[in-house]
Image: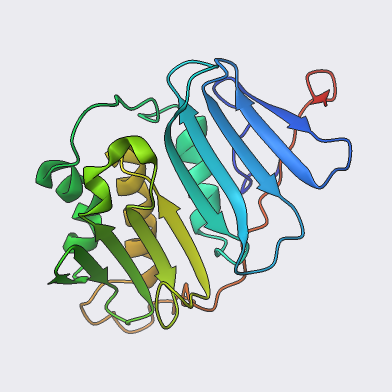
Length: 223
């Protein structure tokens, strides 16, 4: 496998493709974490869906989606976090309190992202103004409905994004913190960069993610 590709074969993740080859499914051996990748997706439509379940036949505990134009640095890091099995099996019934929100966004605060509150919405904006992370305190009060409580986007606004990621209330803080760390790292720090430092490509304009799924044919299954 390419060293830069997500480690979807790690930690019990297996690959399953549909007969049409239009969709790739990666399913944890426990059957409680499932990733769907819809190929040839328009930039503004959902291309990635990650969902976790308490049991293989239960309702979703949490769900995260990403549109087709989500840039390359973001999706591979997200999939690697899931493949490592670090904290994606969250516990339901725990309220989304200030502690969890702080844990999820600490990397943004550390990187100097602007923090604002507007009624039910709490927002963090990157120093270059290109990327926003928004928490909806209202939908967080309905944790069993898997509503979009977290929204990450680049562009004019969440209703007209260049790319966007959404996550439901029970999406693990560790996963969101990892996402925040990636966003903070890729957009750079507020402080002036030393002379000679390589200029980073903006997440608002970088190419969409095209991570590879590789699997041994012997363990791949077709529907």
